[in-house]
Image 1 (cartoon, rainbow, N blue to C red):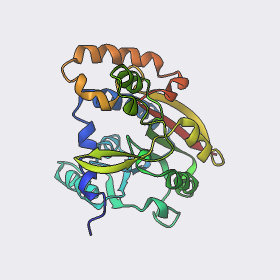
Image 2: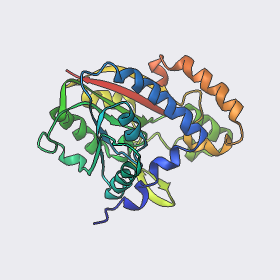
Image 3: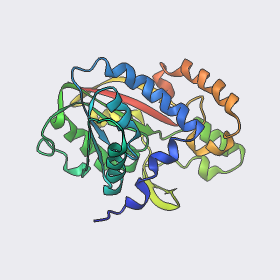
Length: 265
């Protein structure tokens, strides 16, 4: 049965991966995950909002067992198809997941890490996202981690650019508690923007914050990708500057995205 977002989710990751800005932002995430992976006690990972499956495949290359989930059945078919076309066995299983129905009976095991990449949290309303953080402890091992990427409520790059062009509505489009209508593959979808403080508040009863990292503070936001497609040297320079800010969590309040790492207590 086709679900409401099947027509847009399949290409969600592919819209990010090939582009230069997206590649630089993704590298920040994978540098962090590579360091985190060697500290985990086990090898069980659950990925939410898997998209095209790129991250699940990268995890599997590091010998982790991945359960790749999404709210769209179509994206699960893409991940499964990619998995079966590879020349060696991957430790990946995929399934549709109702995020509101997460509990200890959904899976037959608990996880060392739960990961949600770009845009996953932002596709959820505040009510759904809050319930998610309340239910996740049931499927995490003691001391387990959840790492989530989210688009922030304020992006300095984006606001300054659109203010300079006198496009005030776009400059302040993230500054709202309601959903913003966006387009993916020419299809309308709802997006909510969050702050690190909001996610920290939703999770504080069962989690402690281990790390918050800005993603896209010196690097431009993905919304301005088109301005930089022919400026690779500039992007390399900005990427180098970005590294200087990665340990300043305060910058996550004004970056395009932020990574938040939570540990179950």
